[in-house]
Length: 241
Image (cartoon, rainbow, N blue to C red):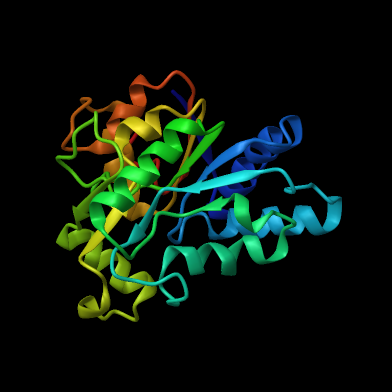
């Protein structure tokens, strides 16, 4: 595991951009594992800016998202499918058929089985991650098995409250209580993992991720065992290291 400490969110996002572009430019048909949430927003803006300025092509890139709220349609403003189009894909030349986000509708068993098979058939060259304040990656909450594959999961109250503040105008009742998420084993199957964590509220989880015991009670700690994991944090998130 390589830990990179940057001054602030902007510098952390720019460091992440360099790593993402290295993959994209050296492998034009790369499979990108992507994440949602507040953390990658600036990275995605920078990817759009680079595309517009330097014409970096995404024509043959494939994307596979970590997760999706269960019960939301693709066109719901808080769905992760909508998030990805709004924050990244709408300004890139990516082929729509190469974009994959778990479905938030339909039979749970079919959705999870089909997405898991899709991930098995398309290994990710890089998997982008954020970090929950409770140590979750994707929507793999504390207690999730390290051998898990794509599954349906009930969200912890702390996750619901965090997301309510960031995306639902503080309305906890508006946040879906369940999600479909890529499993921890599938995250670990990516050739490279890039995790970004910023802000003081992530400091405890960062300390556990980097220096703590590898335990399913802090899902991100499994990254200590990944062959090529890069952790980018700002000074506030690194404050307990």
